[in-house]
Length: 423
Image (tube, rainbow, N blue to C red; front, side, top):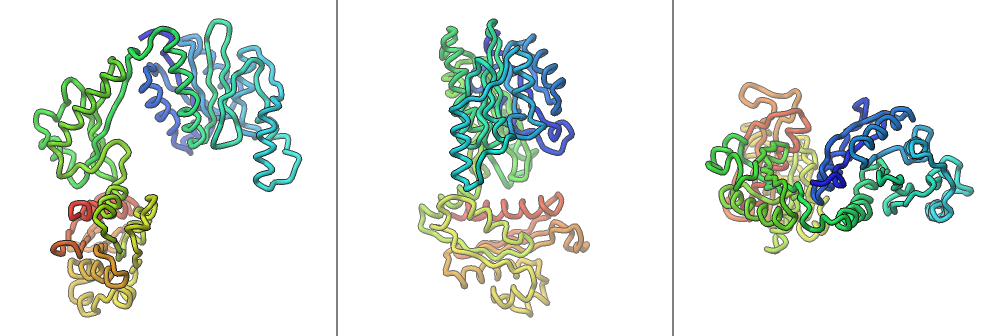
């Protein structure tokens, strides 16, 4: 791979350096740039000081001549990236009239009093000779600065939503055009990955199931990525053209899906809630939920999907036993005999949710999310999940590992998977 495609990433901010904010920007940039042929040779994080920014960018330019930074383009006193890098390039800052006009229009559209405060005016200050990258999600434009030797720095905002949009809309097309004009064309080697998402099967069991594919497929290494949703299987291909990478990945994912079909529910960033909504919509089915330990999380995940109103009718958060009886028609005698966390109660909660909404599918969840409340018979993490209304009623008991948040989330994932399998 030619030197023109070697890139370094520098994320800027004390909050990143000190660990108060997780750096998701560098991970996103590395994936996106690698997908068009960039070789990410180094990633670094520095604090909000001019000296730290200048030193990091200077060293990166000396190594590769190509740097992408995120952060430090805002209006406050700790936003020093433009000034620092302009100083490094020997450029002065000037007010860009077009950028200022856009800032003023944005200011007025939000009903804020004019004139624009001087700190916000700073966002319209641009290094001499810079190319601006449009920001369709925020106020601060990105900045592309290049010297006579062809060394460049692309400065992107630190707000993830703004950075991602700018990367997709402006930076990636610019770099693709730059590398293509340099002669690499579509043959530029890439690093690309695709992921098959599975749930309801342990990582070790999944590896055993895959057999000869457990280590990789046709020379593409396979990574196992366990998380709250399940276990993701990621295939990666390196050093081939984009077209060849896509062909090999598609074939490899198809082989994995064939073996893991029962547990596979989607690819890449697929959300199981969206899969369930789509399947129910196709069949004209509706869902209602009765939730105890998850406290409305299942309903929240379903309603987060656009168009979910065509499928999800509603639910009851029956945290207290009295609500289970009054709203979901769970008999007091059954709670007394079997306990609130039981197969019987979970099934009745699912039926109660259907009864009060008219949905074809009811889901009931009841459990002990902790950290207290467990017993030897029902330890923390014990959850009963039931699905009724389509086929025979089913109920499933498991003991989820993790803290309170993880237990609750995993319970919703398991519930969604039960519905997916049923429909």
